[in-house]
Image 1 (cartoon, rainbow, N blue to C red):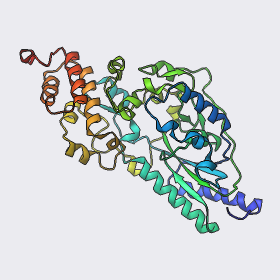
Image 2 (spheres, rainbow, N blue to C red; image 1 turned 30 degrees about the horizontal axis):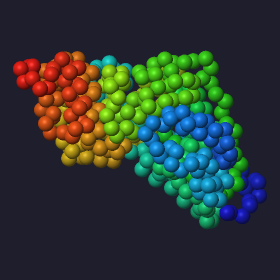
Image 3 (cartoon, rainbow, N blue to C red; image 1 turned 120 degrees about the vertical axis):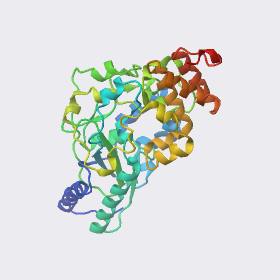
Image 4 (cartoon, helix red, strand yellow; image 1 turned 135 degrees about the vertical axis):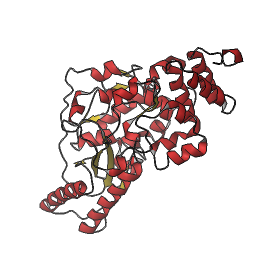
Length: 364
C-alpha cells in the first residue's frame, strides 16, 4: 500500500486522475469505496432465484464479485470510468428492427471490441498515476473478472442503476461502457447519484420477452441478449418468435428509455460501424462460412459467440422474416452442412416460412 498522503495531495491527485481520464477519451471518471454490502445482498438473491440461467461464472467466485479486497488484496478504492459507444452515422435502430429481412446487432458490438479499447486506456491511466506518485498496487478490469461494475460505477457517481438494470446518467443516457481500476490508494470518494426513473416503466413494457420481471430485476433466462450471446444450446421455442430479427443482443430497453434522448454519438473512432453490420442482409450473413465469419468479426465482440451460434441466431431471424423464396433456398442449402444445433433451428425456421424441409416438392 502507498504511504498515506496529506489529504490535500490526495484530493489534488483525484482531480488529476479525472482530468487524465478525460484526456484519454473517457467521458467521466469517479472514485468509489469498496463497501458493496447492499449490492451483494441483491446479487445473492438474484442468484438464488436462478435468474443467471447458465451463466455459472456469476456464482463461481462466491462473494469476491462484491468484495473487491478479496479479489485483489489491498484494494481500498475503485476508479470507475465510462466511455460513450453509440456509433455515429449508424442506421436507425427502429428502422432495422422493423425491416425483418435485415439483422439487428446490438449497437455496442458494431465497432471494435470494447474490452481491448477500454483496457488499453485504463492501463494508460494507471501508468499516468504511477508516473505521478510512484509504485501503485492496482489491477485493471473491463468486464473480465468477477466485478460488480455497475454497482461500483453507481457508488462512484457515474449514474444510477435504472429499472432495466443498466447504468443511467442524466446527461448521457445509458449508451456507454464501464471499466475499473482497483487501487490500494485511499483517494477521496465521490457521492452516488440519486435515481431518476420515477414512475416510468417504458423499459419493462417494451421488453419483447418480458425479461425485466420487476423494476431493477432481469431474469436472464428470458433475455434476448442472453439467448443470442451467452446461451450455448438451443434457444427455447417460447422465445424464438419474440426475438424477431435480433441476431446479437437486444437494445429495446435502451432505445425506449427517455434519458437516452440526451445520449451523444461516440467520439472514439474504434466504435464506428464496421463491415456494415448496422443494417445487414440476413441471407447474406447466413451465407458466411466460418472463415468469412472470422474475417468479418476480427477485433469484434461478436466473435466470442463463434460461427455455430451466429448461424443459430440468424436461422431464427430468417424464420421470423416475411416469406421469401430466397430465404427458403438459403435455409435449405445450409441444412445438410451444419451441426445438429443449427440444423434444428433451420428446421424451425423453414416451418415458420411454411415449408416442410423433408418434402422437396415444397421448395419454391
